Length: 255
Image 1 (tube, helix red, strand yellow):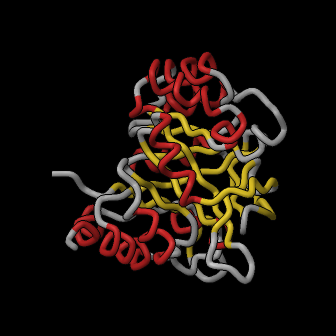
Image 2 (tube, helix red, strand yellow):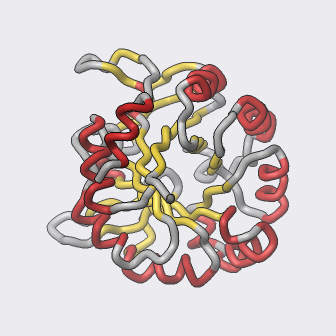
Image 3 (cartoon, one colour):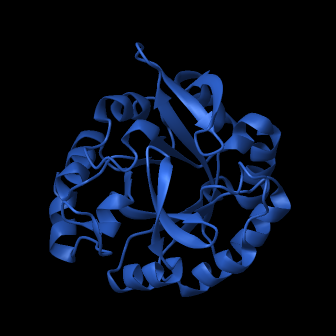
């Protein structure tokens, strides 16, 4: 039986683990390798690692760090950041990474998405949509390069195109909710989910187990990803890596 996936999302900057708020003000958290070790012990369903500056700075992926993460990780690992070519994607998957995430590539070189999907398999290609609400509007604009560059395009036209190009999964990240810990944008996510014919993962806003439960209850079989929820503890946001135990996970699945 398929179940929702509960996914810690780790942000990398200059090789270190950081946490952002609305895609800004990165706060250094620690060593990402240590975080992976803890999530191994807690038997996380899946792990997403995103290098937040690689694409905007036109940097190559940090292959040494990715290989170290893959060697340590005992759960499916999904990596994004700086991937522009089929050769880069293939090299990263050769380390044992299960899926690669691309975002700006979808706008800048959509034909490469098709090439990756054809060569690597659709299931290995995830397109991430970083969406920001347009002021005084109900529209959400797709932004790239760590949210710093507007595209003038919206999810309604882009989701079908991404699937047509061969994306095997869609990751929706709500910029305005990032790090706020006030809950997912369920209205937006429900609208997108009704138009999405491939697996979908949602990110941005989770601050409690109840937020995960609400998303699973409303959306169904999706990946519910979070950063702050699994890194911070308490109102003062002390750094304490955590993850639902088996009993709490079972309750989340019972919707």
